[in-house]
Image (cartoon, rainbow, N blue to C red; front, side, top):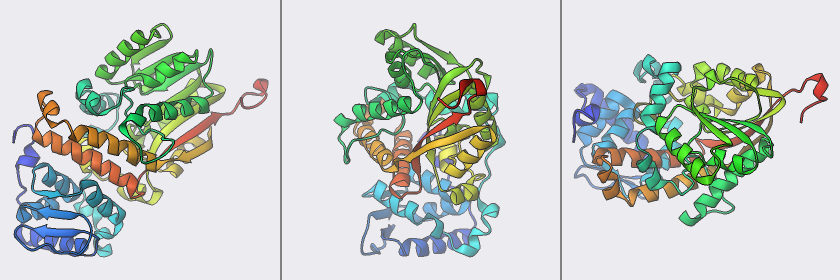
Length: 411
């Protein structure tokens, strides 16, 4: 293991014997009540049903959890200290019982043991660029290994499930087309896209005859998106700009933003919705796709620093539907439609995960080591489990801005 690259994975925390013992007691009691089979070191397997969670190094496992909670749990997997015969299944069990894993009296002390988010990850103009760079500029070739030919990195919408890999591209187009329909995008529409991805939505909007301005903070995504748009013959209809959403100018008939609000951060939600309102014409339409979580869980965890923040999406926070509705209303926007399809995201993630794990050698040739591969597999499985357990959802929302009196109402 490269200790310089993975310092907190290579290093087992120095926890006190007492704290480690208490952690072991709490974790073992919590796991004993779940439909899981557990094997600690050379001890016999306990539990009669469910996925098998085999802990190879119990001392390191409990020390990491005692010191860093769920961050330590994820780092222990990255270090190879535990495995399971069914990663998604085990994580789904844990996600389904998340609020019961810690005894209620100890939950009141959450602020004393949960890590707080570092100020460096706040989504200031500079911070947002760095946060996006850390994830989306990893390598276009890496993402191409597990994404379908549309290079779409958000939930698909399947006509039926379970789905096969061959269904994914059409399901991504189905999702994109529904968003464009929600936004009323057609011939001559002046469309703003916040969060370009690798350009598929802009391409399909241009094919409808729209004029598109798409903004991104990822240099690598921008370069590939521009190449794909040029190859499709739409370079004259789409402008892809390296620009923060807060710095966009002009007015547009419609705005579409797919799974970008999760990267905004709670401090900037009001600014985000105020910017949407500023950039759309009176009577205009805004179509959002957003990952959401229950409002009570969002309130309980919104200041917590998690494994996902540390290793995958720095600076992010998944909103709740009430939080979106409240921020939108304060900005003068009305939520007209709100449809959820979380099961489809679980299916999308399954297809990505299976594709990724089938290509370990290719991942290695791109310069990503074994720790990264375990980290990425854990991320995809962890996310899939969240949707399978119902802890997470994904929704398409239509927001509208009131028309002026001269316009005679909403379009």
